[in-house]
Length: 204
Ligand SMILES: [Zn+2]
Image (cartoon, rainbow, N blue to C red; front, side):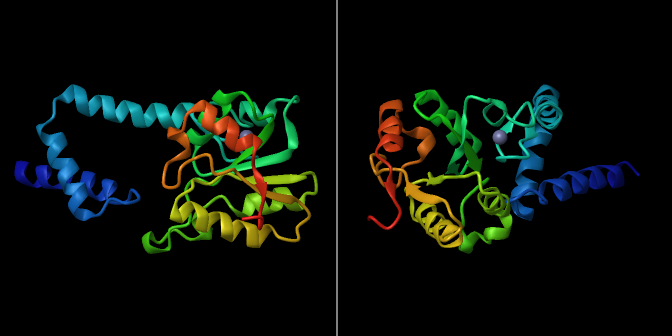
């Protein structure tokens, strides 16, 4: 009986873990074994962090940013220019760009980038909402601020194709950010420069 119960608790946890993105059966088992050896405190902190995350965080229905309110503070701010939309991969990119204090428009968070080899297609990202925002007619400019990586550039190119002829001007953040680095890791000065010297798509 006791043996059976142990097995089912183990199965239940590994089954739950393996439903998470990027975690296969083997990784799920490794995490379960780790938690088996960990203190009760560590396991409780993990469980509590998951619950607090779900309880306190909300996805902004407008831009997809993750904060404690919906709409997020940026979308809710009447002083921000809703006609200018900066498209980024992650909520952490918004945080980095906000720190520069230079940008006065709003954002659109994709929640990732296109990665065909990992099975991340347009349907997995917050793209449809972006297209409908632009089609709504209030957006003058879409600034593509995906990371200057192979996948970030590929995502920007895909978005440029989708957004072409939908009425908004398309720009890309300038290349002050070295190729291959993540936006969230760039310095304030570099990010400010990237925003200010953004260029129209197609200008190279
Ligand atoms: Zn928002």
